[in-house]
Length: 213
Image (cartoon, rainbow, N blue to C red; front, side):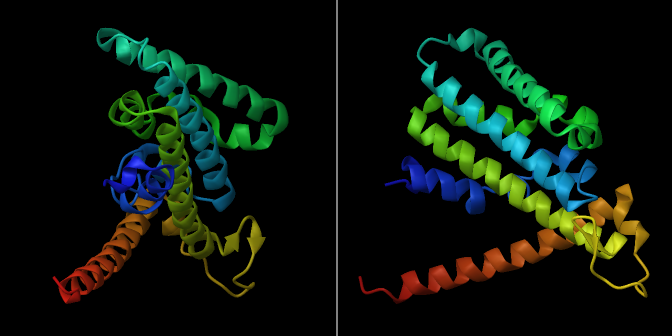
């Protein structure tokens, strides 16, 4: 049985096995643009998660009513509606975060992660699985960009969540807060993640090979 055919399996799949940033490598625009500070990354990640969960669930509930021929426009309407709600909530209750993220909140409408899950998963599965997939993918995206942003902020600014942690004598590596630093940090993290995945795959293969027939 495919593990993704359960709520927990769909959730874990998004967090680990098909992590949007470190495995599928989609949604790179906000990943590189807003990760100069950990607080920005969490705000962007959770905003995307809310839209992903709500759109996944709504599209799954309506999948039998949406014609195959108009599914893309229907996806856009659903996703744009939830993005608008999230944007209004941020402007009302978190104006500083809204101003910092700026144009990247409305651009969630065309985020590849949202469309990919709507097309490949939510439109083909029931609401429970779609909900698990949305939560897993959203939290996987949030965790990945928060790690990326934390590394860039710590070594690029000497702070974490705006608090100085490296001491007054630390010379920040300003390159890491520049656009090029985003690509560099992401590349290093991808190497580390791939090394860890290979070790895990090797251990799992060894265990399977050692099991009696």
